[in-house]
Length: 196
Image (cartoon, rainbow, N blue to C red; front, side, top):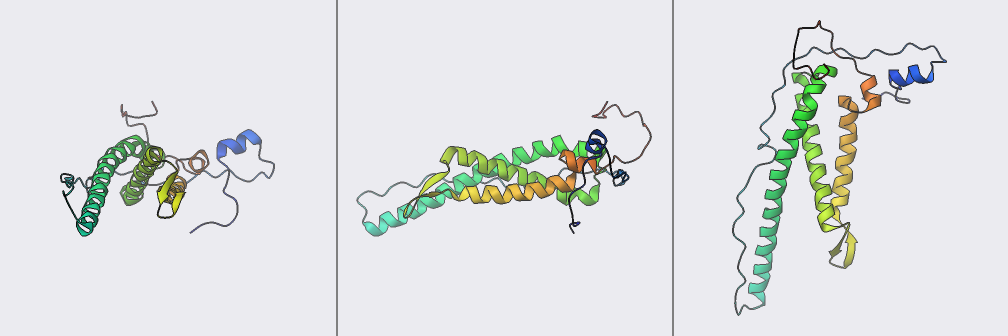
């Protein structure tokens, strides 16, 4: 549930700008660390085999041409879906490897937060796919009544809104990071520490 009022400033910003109200600077939340297992991205982005493109019938009447156009449209949707699945699988995996180890260390991301981290990675992958397709297809496409806005702009906007929520929840912006503190624990001599 959202807290009413403005979002608090990051502690670094409060120190830099001064604290005229002398309010205590919030330290953050401490969560127990635990190991997160990367999901099988093929569950979210299943690979599929695209059949061969349908061949145009020769000497076809109007009914056969309509059926052929329908088959080609289905084939094109399958082809785009297969490309999106491969792209999403790669991007989500890279995002998990890039973000989750740092979040485990800095924010104490634990196994109870796994679904949020997975949703974040899926959201990033789908948003990147939308932006890639918009670059290929353009912002304006031809509709039934002429030029119109590409529907991918709406989808990208919705994913961007969702991504903004995940960024705030996971502490991936400077403001959100300031509200989090790393979990306490002594130096265990871990040589894989990303902050050494």
